[in-house]
Length: 292
Image (cartoon, rainbow, N blue to C red; front, side, top):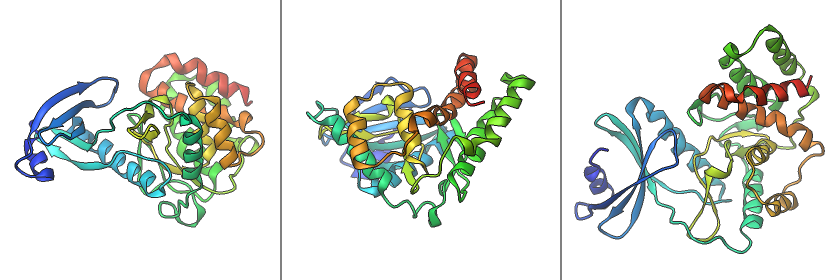
């Protein structure tokens, strides 16, 4: 780990020093630490090789986009940059606290409000995508804009991942995948309006903040169909029924969502296949074959 004293002095003045450095486990992309400062505050530091500085630029942009909706809390990024051979990101440390009594209901309503916020700053004219490409985990996420949601999901989500995973599949499997892409409009629907999405909303990407409410972290933001965020919450589980009930009260979900859910999670399973290997092959092919 580098010496971040000069960065801290730049942020808070020369009288503030780093008193404590505590490694944080749990991430598989970046090294992470909590910095305790002499003025009593704590900060969260992420560090990676300098060639991966794009991770932190994308995270800063994504958190800022979510913050701008005013719907749900995210940590504030204080600084990103390079130090010696490393890229770094410093943000406020979200000190955990016990969850409020209505944690899940509040979380569901807040996510619905985020999805209902106007996303035209990032994709004008009701289109889908984002201002920049970013990352889904360690994988590159393509956010080229499209006028239609189905076209965007076909070309910038599933097709990209299928091509990356091509070596895992034989001719018959590739044919099945191409058929799915060709007939995607038979399974997906255009949403009533585009939504800003977190993009990677599983149980590891929110924390309970000092206010006892959910704070979102590690986004892979883009403008899309709100169903894609909801589907991701169901992929690995852990979200209480009250979360979904409250969400549906605040933002209507179109009929047939449960039949589309696996198609949205196919993107994440393909990304896992590309990042982590063949253990995800079976789950990918079960979904592909179920839509034939």
